[in-house]
Length: 291
Image 1: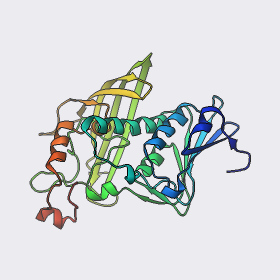
Image 2 (image 1 turned 60 degrees about the vertical axis):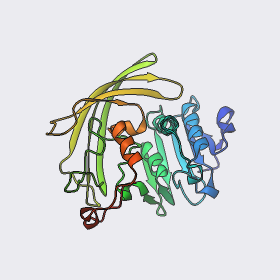
Image 3 (image 1 turned 30 degrees about the vertical axis):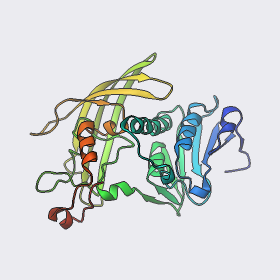
Image 4 (image 1 turned 90 degrees about the vertical axis):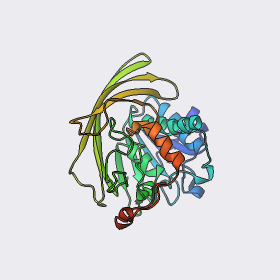
């Protein structure tokens, strides 16, 4: 950035893990944890939401980057602790609300990527509208290497928990190595309430390169209640051209896992049951055990 940028004033100047500078209508937000490779902890998530909710009134664009050698190494694992269901949902919603503030905010956001762009850092970059990568940038989504269906940006609503993607001979999901996803949503807000209609499309594949075959569509509608913390969502979705054995119309709450079209009850049962052991079919496919 150039010397024309000056430190922000007011609330933005009080943030401890974000360095915010302004130059006319452009706001530059820099993740400021270089000793931690800009790993995201609870404080940084809250500061991201605060910053994008309180941009200067004359702001017309925002740039987000990372201090030091890396953009963002993902979740700060030193803060990873066991949580009960209620706390886990609140923690997930905190991330979801912060990234929605970026994605659906009032100004376009440009992410400048260098070094590690991994895990939650990749999700953060995906929330921006334009991404510019330096030659040093490299990417990773460790969860995806283990056949976990990740959700930060949303998935095909209307389908059951892990219903899409490769399955073993017994019909159990084994997880894919790549995926295609897209969504379109129309919203109308009146006061603290709103309604939405949406269409999602996606599929995961055994190949490392995403394919364009067997794409599945889900469609639905829902309501929104807007709070200071973020919108509370309740969607009802169904597969388009539903096949035998697939989900019927189902409600989807506003938690991060549910936004992926997952059935929370099945998800809890699978989580409590622990990792799925490797089978011969899974070994032949080179799949990792699901954790």
